[in-house]
Amino acid sequence: MNHSQTVVNIGWLLDGSGASMQPDMQLEVRAGRICAVNSRAANEPLGFNVLDLSDHTVLPALIDSHVHLFMSATADSTVREHQLVATYAELKATIARHLDQHFENGVVAVRDGGDRYGHVLRFKQAITESAPLPVALKTAGRAWHASGRYGRLIGRSPGKGQSLSTAVAAALAPAVAIDHIKLVNSGLNSLKAFGHQTAPQFAPQEIRAVVKLARTSQLKVMVHANGVRPVREAVESGCDSIEHGFFMGPDNLKRMADHQVTWVPTAITMKAYAEQLAPASAAAATALKNYEHQLEQIAFAKRSGVRIALGTDAGSLGVRHGYAVRQELEILIMAGFALEEAVRCATYNGARLLGLDHLGTLTAGKTATFLAVPGPPEMLLQHMSQATLYSEACALGPF
Ligand SMILES: [Zn+2]
Image (tube, rainbow, N blue to C red; front, top):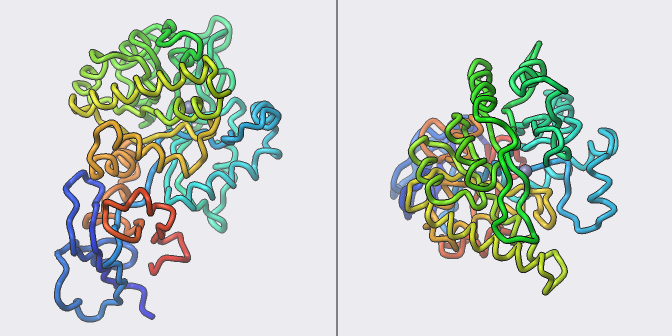
C-alpha cells in the first residue's frame, strides 16, 4: 500500500481552532502532512489511499500543558513520599511509563513543571534518535522557589545572597538545556482555610529580570501562582503563563486577557483531592469548594477572553497521567465552554504555549496527528476511551 498520499473521510471535524464543528469533511494528507481540508467530495481524488472515518469525530491529538512526570497519581503514601526523593535510576522507568500513559490517552505533547533533582530533564537528554519518545516532552528541569517557601519538591532556590536572575542565568550557562523557566510565586492552596492567600515569593523586579533573561534565550516563563498579589505581580512582570491561578480574582483575569497571558487552571487537582481525601473530612470539603470556585473563575475567563491552555498537574494526588486530560476537558465544558472551545484549549492553545507549530490544528500545513472517536461529537467525551490515535509515530496510523 502506498502510504504517501491518503484522503481521510471524516464524519465530524473539530479542527482545534475553536471553529464550529464541520460535518462530512475530507483531509488530504501527503507524507504525513495535511495539504488540504475540504468538504467531502462524492469521489475521492485519484491516486490516494482512503481512510474511512465517516462515522467518527476527528480532532487534533491532545496536549497537556502542565504535568509532573516524576510523580504518580497513586494514593499509596509510601510511593508518594518515596517518589519525591527517588534516584534517577529508580524513576527512569516511571517517567517512561507516564509518557506511555499520555500516548495511550491520545496526548502527544506534555509540558513538565519540574522536579527537585531535574530527573525529567536528564531523562529527556538521554533520549536517542534510535528510540524516540512517543510524546513531545518540554521540561522546566528544576523550578525556582524562594528559600524557605513552597517549591522544594519541584525545584530549588537561589543561593544565599544570590538574586533570582543571577541564579537562573548561572543555571542556563553554558548551554540552555531546558525548554522553559518555571517560577513558583505563591504557596499551595490551603485545604484548611478556604481562599487563604499567601504572599508572593519573589519581588516583581526579580521576576522581570528573569523574563528579560528568558527572552534572550527564546524561553518562556511559566509561573505557579495562586491568590491576587502573586498572580498580579507575575502578570505585570511579563510572564507567559499563570499556572493554577486559584483565587486570582476577576481583575487579574481581565489583566491576563489584556496582556495575553495564558492561563493553565489545573482544576482537576482540587476535584481529585476532594475525591481522594477522607470522605466528609473538612479537607475534602475545602478542596471541593476550591474546585467550585475555580469553575466560576474559568467561566469568567471565558467571558473575558482569557486564553486557556489545558493542563492537569498530572502526578498530583489522584490526577492520572493521560486520563486526566479527558477529565479536565469535561471540567471546561462544565464551566461553560462549547466543545469546540474546550478542544481548542487542549490542542491549539497548548501547541502555541509549547511552541509546537506543527501540532494543534487540523489545517493545511500541519502534521496529520489526530484522534478518531467513534460516533458524533455529542458522544465525544463518553467514547474517548475508544479513540484511535493516528500519527507518524504510531503503528496504528496509516501514515
Ligand atoms: Zn505543577
